[in-house]
Length: 264
Ligand SMILES: [Zn+2]
Ligand SMILES: [Zn+2]
Image 1 (cartoon, protein in one colour):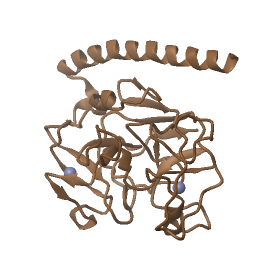
Image 2 (cartoon, helix red, strand yellow; image 1 turned 60 degrees about the vertical axis):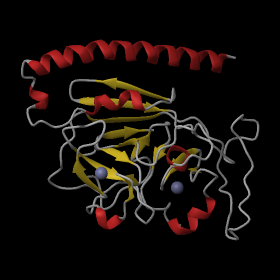
Image 3 (cartoon, helix red, strand yellow; image 1 turned 90 degrees about the horizontal axis):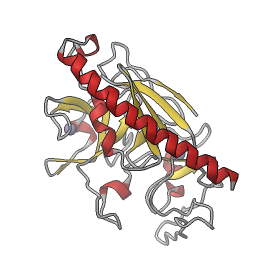
């Protein structure tokens, strides 16, 4: 019982923080009108994406130049990696894949905190993405890069993905590839393969594999797996990543911008 009580307090506390953030956000916009220095470069303000993170397991704290994102990293779809007494647990059989195997881990709530740029800009020196979470999807799940755990082969690890193409490392659930729960209408009526899907740690957004009705390929993108133009959320244009069907899937040779920090 005490655990449940603590979670309730945390959630309530976060909601309060979010309200406060909304107020300071309004102030921020007023400051911007009078020439706030944080946006002199016309870099896009990614705080507009906050409400697209529909999961209660993600919270935002928006500051003048940074955004703190806290996620519990709990998928809102069924998975064979949930503990068997969890309502979202479901068995999974993939008879066509003779190499299918289950990872030993089970999904558990995380406390991953990203502090990322609110006004992302291209980095002069591009940094490689590291191991572990490199971003977060709109349903609270962590994005990992195209590398497997040391000693493993990522193409072999694909055989451990669950019914929605994710799997845990230890108890940290994550996507290396297209999060099909968010992009394909396989039980999720909100799925959309052109939608905004989440953020990487440099503050640049990730979009689905389809743009203007066309499924993108790696050759359509730069070395970091993105390009710049207007999107629904950024009519003035923004650099953004796209997920594709082929390696490296989400990100290419590193962050286009300067990554923030994370704790887990
Ligand atoms: Zn993995
Ligand atoms: Zn695009």
